[in-house]
Image (cartoon, rainbow, N blue to C red; front, side, top):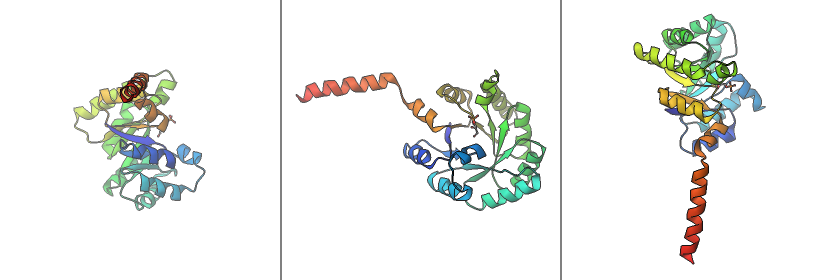
Length: 214
Ligand code: G3P
């Protein structure tokens, strides 16, 4: 499973990429707003750091305007993926961008029917938001299972990005189900690595090594 960082924070991206496990990044208007920086200069810096696809979300609401916005972002780098919301206007945009060979990430996916329509329109990626489904007492990972099954049934090449990941269990379940990608906040990345028994084991080894040296 590929790992994307779900952040526009340059320090988090630099640190994550230095760990050698980051394949791409996803951003959205809320994550961009947190950084208090000009949008385009920030995106350009993100693209310099990340060695793979970077999702950049359009903010217009009509298909025509979204396509124009998307073309502008796609010119910046071949790694730009245009994040488009799943609705009727969004579907038209995905079809147009797919014909232009511009990659898309269809976002705010909350049902498997949305994921199937997005794929039919030519989406490169779809992003089911698992945490937000759990937040309203649903089962986000069940949606991921459904999408994996449907895409397998019809050999659909659209990749599934498990998004709105809130904790390590979401990440592990995404991998068990066979999702293509999990996009995770930096805080989850560090939690994936830490284990108290690893820390305890290291402490013991180092203490014993001190005895050997003496
Ligand atoms: O990138 C979009 C998604 O991951 C948002 O997550 O935590 O705001 O539901 P969250």
